[in-house]
Length: 201
Length: 159
Image (tube, rainbow over all chains, first blue to last red; front, side, top):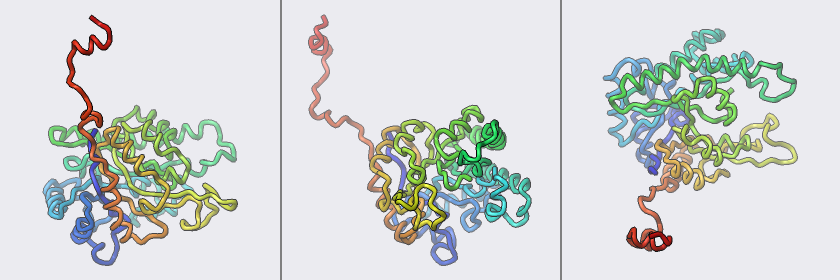
């Protein structure tokens, strides 16, 4: 058996406009002062991380990790909860979920999906040699039919799950590749999908 | 995906991909009345991340799981700060330790009543007090004798 690591804190709900919640430096100080040893980072918040840069630059990752470590903290996981959600969206939720995406893909569901997949893949690269797990949502195509009335046409559920798997397989393989590329270090990113019903839409 | 069954439907279609794992968050189980402890028995090998978030479910003659289009605070199922809801975190941390969970316990604060600041202040000691420093010995070692194969054989009537 192994002792569980913690306590850690997910920063998504704490980032805000007022100090100390308005930048990574001061929120790290605050979290550390409360006794936290790890932070889970929302990758959609540029105040926490430049995801694109982190996916491309080892120097940037080293510098970011160093800053976090200087406060006695570690990154527990990067999170792409908002982007992962957009990998699969039923049209009924298009308008509401546009809020999770940049303005340039609003009203363009296909482009939004492409953007979301790219974002999650970048998080895989960014995690490659520093964090073991990755947190995200899967998105879904079936929420409007979660209740079994009206009767679902035969084959609808299977088709939706087939499509969801089709979209995620290349992402999962990408995470596998990111891991194996650096397997000599200490890398084992795993995509963790939250078992949440209210937010998997 | 919203429960074990729908996760399995997905997993089958991605050929049981080893990267498709689970972030365990018991609060969501309370809202849909899933067994959050047996879920760990079923899926512990796939649980690689953990959100410490609490919830409560208080159904009435007016509202239940669907929530009646009410605000979070007025729903039967609602998210709470750790310790303020109904999740048995003693049992959750015990099961995760028993199954050798090697990841982090991460506070996710989403409470419909308490402030985020108080939730964060209380969250660190709450998690610390629930983390189980796993034992390296059996609790009855103190009363154990030394092992002598001859004695074992004689106890079992073997020659």
